[in-house]
Length: 197
Image (cartoon, rainbow, N blue to C red; front, top):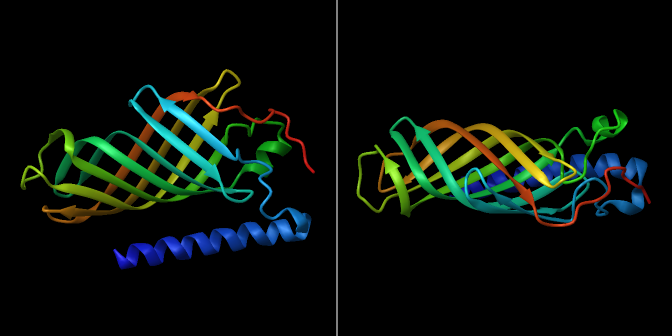
């Protein structure tokens, strides 16, 4: 667990410094001003029933957390059930999307993320992993994702990653992570035509 915290802290520092350098060159007084990202975004997922909350931290960095159905697969097997997803996202293509006159509202962009997903034993629907009935499973790794929010509020998010599955009562191992959600953004979004201070 200590290695995971160090990895998360390093990722946050690197992303903040990278974001901060570009902003101090262009807009020194607005480092923590959220220009592209939504300050707060709540999404209700319909395909995989659940709820997601994302908060803008800096111009291109957000933190998100969500609860819904998830699927884990690694060397030991698979598990399907209630999952808590947390992400620290760095959106890398906002400026390019703006130059091409594309939508960035609703955090529409591509991102890299430090990812953690916890698959709980209490609401597990299926598994083929050998172990006690009450085992939990955690994913720690990185993902690459694409998120789009449309004018009517519909939203999709697809991400693919790789990382380490840490088992509580079952063996650990490496494996992929794929997550796809389709839902509706319940919070008010910024204008599709961004304005700059």
